Image (cartoon, rainbow, N blue to C red; front, side):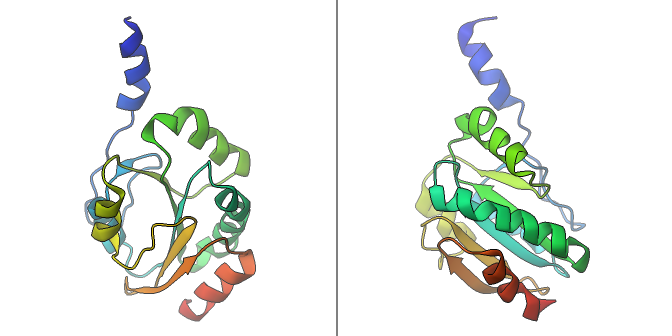
Length: 166
């Protein structure tokens, strides 16, 4: 196998999952743009969604991640869906993103931001996003964004944001 093929095969093995109806979410490690994420979230009506933007190179993101894992574990049965959107480079999936997710024990979906203009990504998803990370969007059960949390959050801060929505 040629060297370039060896480098590309892991990246090509990531399947871009369609964001159809039925309330199903794309698989973990799907590469999605802002419009695809927005479409996937439309199928989550009835759930409280915690959509967190993060990266492995972001120290506050790494520090807040255990709070997201705990939130998912405590509230999943109550209809809370935690979803992580990594803004790491797609090429860092195998070497950085997957090992980090395994290390923190996250069992919720982790999506990877598709390459392209970050401003287009944010505009397609929600123009109110600052672009700073970590940043978390909280959706109510009707699928409306009710809060955007900028910066590192604690478990207690996440819990305070979702409890009125349960």
